[in-house]
Image 1 (tube, helix red, strand yellow):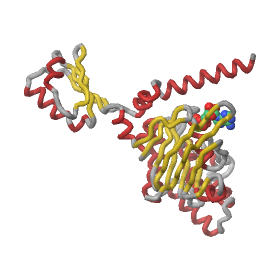
Image 2: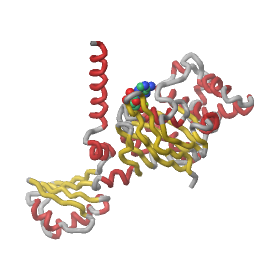
Image 3: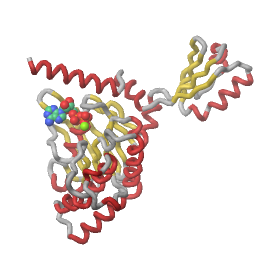
Image 4: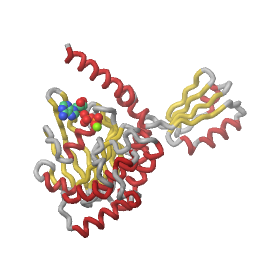
Length: 328
Ligand SMILES: Nc1ncnc2c1ncn2[C@@H]1O[C@H](COP(=O)(O)OP(=O)(O)O)[C@@H](O)[C@H]1O
Ligand SMILES: [Mg+2]
């Protein structure tokens, strides 16, 4: 396995604020790696440092073996970037937007035209290539930006909040392209997001980031298992009996309340039939059974004591206070 990105103690301060606080991780080639966190967590600042647009205050990083401080041109050739804010020229056509960008890389005309056609095909925009971007939907614009980021055949792609503000269907559609890039083209991808489903569905591994620090880093499945696993809730008139009947090494916790039992266990779906069989054998009446699988939101909550949405709200409130103070 080739290490594509190696980050050691990367830190960025803005005055008193530590926006990125000694983060370290390694990403292997072809991996989709997610930085998941609320607004202001330090995701964009991290990508800006890795793409050499912002100097780290301290720490180091290598992209495909190239040091971000020592060889900025080298790093820039190895990476493609899709920014958080849209950066297309509205008045130009899809093809012109690609061509304009491509000239920056000084590729010969034939290669350039061939690549533009290839990439527009990949993101299914070939039949719209001569239309001006102004007429494009949000999803089409995003796809065009991704295609543009790939023109110089980078080995690493940075996607900053790639699906922000898109509707769920368009988001789904975009995920498909991101997966193709990693699987079929072996491109290493770092994406930032504050959508849990996006990180969960797309990323091989996720770093959960809050206040500039990585608070957890693992595969989505391991992150979710780390907080104790799934919860099976059984409603019954006799919850006590259920709690004493169900004894098994795969049960990590069992508690009975009023008229229900809550069982915490890993991989609940593999054990449901055993649970039901046991209850039938003991003739224990059951009103209902439900399975809850924890989400990354639960993981974030268990590590920080807040949901990502609450963190976003805290931040907005913090900014309002800040501006109010500045006005006085
Ligand atoms: N150029 C800057 N000057 C001062 N503070 C900044 C600057 N850029 C980002 N910040 C602050 O750094 C923190 C992290 O920001 P950012 O990396 O944009 O977060 P995210 O992308 O996770 O929403 C925020 O508190 C933000 O206000
Ligand atoms: Mg950001």
